Image (tube, rainbow, N blue to C red; front, top):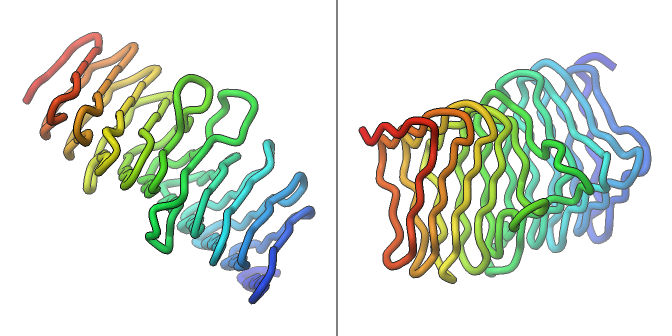
Length: 239
């Protein structure tokens, strides 16, 4: 009730959510070796209530159609291996942080676990995505967003594929692939794409930036050592 918190922990096992876990405005924390957020297992709070979901040794898997929602509180999903996303949503400007490969052993991808092209991440604030083996993939497997600012780093193999519904800012440490000739593809369906921090692909990795119906503003470096770089928009401002 009210600001009461919810803490669920399996010290050496799987946490399976098949029913709602909620607080009115309090923090919700779910921790286990593996997290299975199954149908009906929605997590919710409001106000400044935070949501923290942690898989200590394995993966977090959100079934298609499940959600975790708050207003101003940070949402953090962190797994030692993979994070398969359905929907993480803030009704305001809460930060959303998703980490696959929290143990830094080079294994873990962030994937879209929905059948359609509905948003995986919604906030007017910043989404920070960190993985080892890819953040989304081509076509319908991309990470679908309706966010304000993106920060994304992929460290080992795989690429970064983001599809944004409206205007997007690249901020923080930027969008980077650090190994494996990883490609970067950012597609904004409507609105502007503003690059305020670096967009850098590794090796022969390509960089593709597209604002289908808006201006692309480059205010930071966009680069690949040997890969192709393509920037497309209604208007391009190379500031």
